[in-house]
Length: 330
Ligand code: PMV
Image (tube, helix red, strand yellow):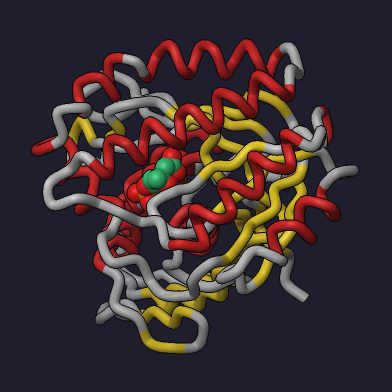
């Protein structure tokens, strides 16, 4: 064992938003998804993480947006990387988001993708993009997708060890420029975490079997809509997957209701814009924010309409972004 290791690296990863949603785990310990998912990586929401391994053992230290944080899943990911590097050295992790943490803006996606990449580099572990995606998935399912840019699919896989549960790029961001306008309706951290909510849905919603049974068809439909660059079809499938997810959440016991009044108002605004001739489609994760998918040309009008909705604090426009990358040292 290489007892003592020292090395520092910084990585930056973008967040992503799922068009076909992931909800439910086929293995909780390895964090294996019960269904596949398809997302777009967002260039305006990112996490930058520096990992420094220091000589000697001890506790890992984690600073999230300047404040000390305790994150079991981050420590577990570092343990996996230490095991692979053959070291027991402790790490100092400094991570900053350029958006509010834990409020349905997928900070875990960009956070665990950046952590996996920075920690592997700092530990001198040579991991392929697929291995990084598998590692990021251990932190959070959606993080597996943030290793890559553009349109990305995370496979649920069937292998008990999770070796086939990784993400892969479908289409580069530059090949089909789109915009996502994020309407922020609350800056508070969500009440029920995704992991807790997923377990609860699987255990109690009568819709859960329908959710898993219909996932493959949704993925196949979305893949072909993306391949055909059929924006209306991509948008229609996106809203369908989102509403199916929230129907599952609402029929969970106790119910998972992540929406607030402004979330519902923003949904109606998107539908009104569409009735008025602007092709725009909404999606919502385990939180109250509404993300509107549109063309870059329509993004200013969509952002203006969403900012005017009562209860919307801010509408932030993002393009599609690239995958996680190491940041060169100054
Ligand atoms: O990756 P997690 O554990 O934060 O779960 C993500 C769940 C959703 O955001 C609701 C859907 C998705 O595919 O991102």
